[in-house]
Length: 505
Ligand SMILES: [Zn+2]
Image (cartoon, rainbow, N blue to C red; front, side):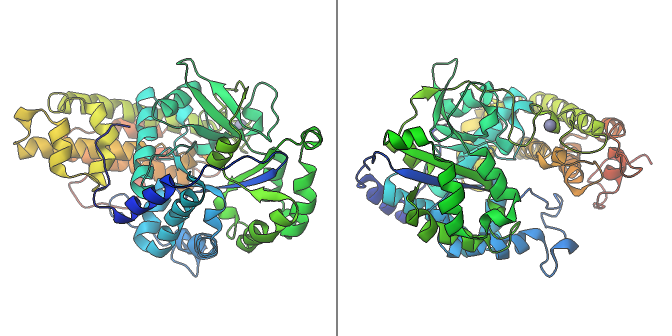
């Protein structure tokens, strides 16, 4: 990580550091069976990027929106029950920001869970997440780096220490992502068992050797169990039955005979526990408190397991690959049979977003190349300025060339173009490509984020990217409804005059 950010005056953080540093290292216990539940907690950003407010979502009634509904059904009960301290989890930055703003008590409990875990075991149980839930193998090299660094910055700000694990959106992986993650201190990630191209036993972690000479530890979750927990309601009706039956069935008999430790890992969306499946927050609590220990399983988390049993075997990976597509990452690129209907719109939407991203990047370099020491290094750290985690003086002092620092118009235009970069990153949120059709809210949201970038660039330098974007978006066609991406763009909420170039109807 670039070493410019420190938590100043954080008394609680300092206290925890002292406690953590005095925690005795755990000893491994031969023959112990461990259970790790990983929850991927995430909500895509759905705020109107011009007003920064969530629209009313009628499907969430009686709540105003799904974030409120899911907080009530899942985030709050799991946080109040203390479940976060016993499981492995990642909290998506966009969800973390929302929770911090609207339910700070729930947010604080989740953050404290990682601190409690560090105090108890010397290592955390929270993982970072690539910032915008972008399918990183489909991103440019520059965007991969930004996504990973923003995810790490966000984690450090929230949890008060560097992340050692990173959750990749849809567990989508390629070699370049792993290299970048390893370069910035990430030690481990989670993958689906079918992402291994060499044989594995998912009850232990594996080392992925990287061309740079670095390593990444890969934890492979138990595929059948994780699938059943996600999609078979009967599986999670009774924590005792789950531990006594399903869990024990997945232990490797040879390892038991040899008195070797093993880890069963179940990875699912975190929202499963109470939202997708009602009352499963209670299932989780009971599993943690009674079901697992009563049937010979100790609850464990990933970095803690790495300390007890570092990976020794090596694995090779299928790359690119992901947990919810059997066709590499085609689900988010060209479309594939993982979703019904004609998914040609996915390629067209991606092309439209890639074009505007490329064009905006050229303008960014053109207009700020003589202002910033290194425009892309400044973008990688822009989150610190945007979120108020670093002062203006400090940020500009580091990034702007001395002769440019005193011109307010130059600083304003540079900020605007960095802000446009921020919204372009948002426009690649994976949810826009995940589902079957273009005429859904998720693709429309990605288009809305790109429109925000169009607006900012128009205000900053008077250049109209809207026409080219619309020309590209026409090619993306819904198979369910007679609409194109350009129609979705035109149907976005109106904005005050002067914020967008004129729209040719
Ligand atoms: Zn697929």
